[in-house]
Length: 475
Image 1 (cartoon, rainbow, N blue to C red):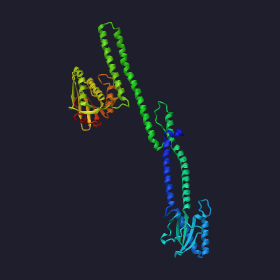
Image 2: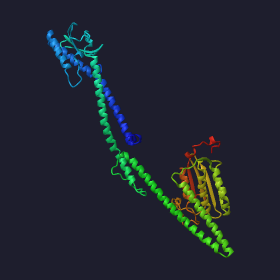
Image 3: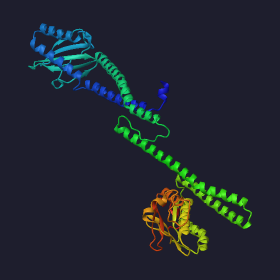
């Protein structure tokens, strides 16, 4: 029992809430009924007094002889104090009086001197009056000649109050016990669908991500089942993506490693110094290519996980992009290419600087690799009211409309491209942009006639830190 009370369960929570509401409701209703019964003007006690006083007044009008009047009054009193299953008044706790309209006392219960002998005023007829030790009610006869007065001792009323309260609370206790049992059964039965869902999940194999199909569908359970099915579908998709990723990665590294092995064997066994030097150069180039593939695989793994989030820091994007262009300038000069940067003086943003740098480096590297010798590459940075744009355009062969979606998939390389790569660069760029709630698009460059990749980042992401607060001028 103590273990059940210590546990935090939905069953106990629902049962407790229902019991509290039920107890408060029953208490309020019984309290209202109790006070309503003893209302001074309209309570059940008043009704009883009024009926008895009216009966005494009628008896008086029918039996005008003093002997007959006393006999009728005593007979009425015997009826009142007659033992019953209900609470019974004792003879000394009930008093009767009869008055005429001139104010003469015609009859008073003998041996009860404590009952005040005070003529009831007309304005007090039908109204309960309180005297020391007594509560009385006066009612006139139909002909108005006589007034019957009935009085109950305060001791009797106190016993009546105690009896009523005892009955009320015993009734409340029984009702609460019955309601507790009923609620216990109702809540236990009502929560059974949760156990059914738990059993369905428990029976699933570790690699089974199919949707849950409960035998009965309840409106309240639909969000839970839908959320579980969505999570399982995402988990299944993620695991399938990871399997594909590792399979593709293994396939991607198998060929370079095999080539490295062959070139290493050739270097070790070649007698001619010139051929051995060529083989060594090829071996070094193969090692460099394998290292690039491995670095991109590590980068993809770093930014691909669903738990990854951009580590935002305040960054001058113009300075960042300028550094990337400066680092790639020697390679462009070697290929006689013109690498141009078009950007304003400053564009401050809150972003993951390292991630954005990797994205821009991949786009610039692709533009240099796919542009012909003597070609031009334009890197443009633009800021508008609610967007920031980073575009890289080249004079390469461009990308067909049909291929503009699949080039962002991992290990995807187009057959028409004159050079080879890992097929990971654009997938990395897309993931980084997604982490910044942005989008990346590829179109035909209007100015250079090649491909143009454009990163669009939402302005609202960058307004979390005010440039002025950190000492930087606004762009």
